Amino acid sequence: MLRLISDKRTEIILRQKEPVIAALSAKYSVPAAFIKAILYMEMTRIDIMDTVADAVVLSNLFSKKDSSTGYAQIFGRVALNAVNSALDHGISDFLYIKLDTAHRLDPDNPADVRAVWKYLRRNINANIEAGVLNMLSAAEEMTGRIDFSSYSEEELKLILTRYNANTRKITKYGEEAYSHYLRYLNK
Picture 1: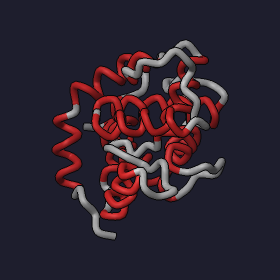
Picture 2: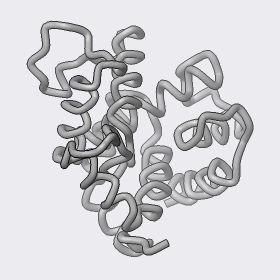
Picture 3: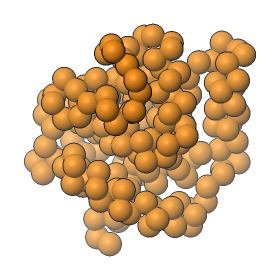
Picture 4: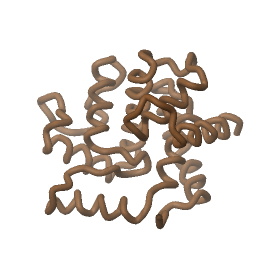
């Protein structure tokens, strides 16, 4: 795997994005260390194939219509599901996406997915926010509640795992992300 963002560069970017991360942490009650852990995991795994996948989606010439994009490495469809979940819970709304829409955005509608994907690809702060909304959605799915102050170590690992994979078992990714969460928590 030819990584495009080194560990060192990731840490620089996270420091640069500190005001955005702090604002999202306060807005959604997700610990900044948790947001940083996910971003670190996703950014340090961006490789040349991610760039190729984004180019294929952007070209709209082939059957691939969605890919993980941006620092949060989030798919347009996943972002729409996360926004819809936040909307249903009264946490957020479509305004942050800044799409002129008279309908609820549908993750099964290719035009909606494409519009959101393109926006998240070009607006990195919105990309990070969509990632945070996906963290909230994963938390609710894995624990039945959204309350980061009450999660056990196992629940945090499950949420971190779910961000990356559709499974109900803690994975190596969840374990590693949790170690980064603790590292950022202690900084």
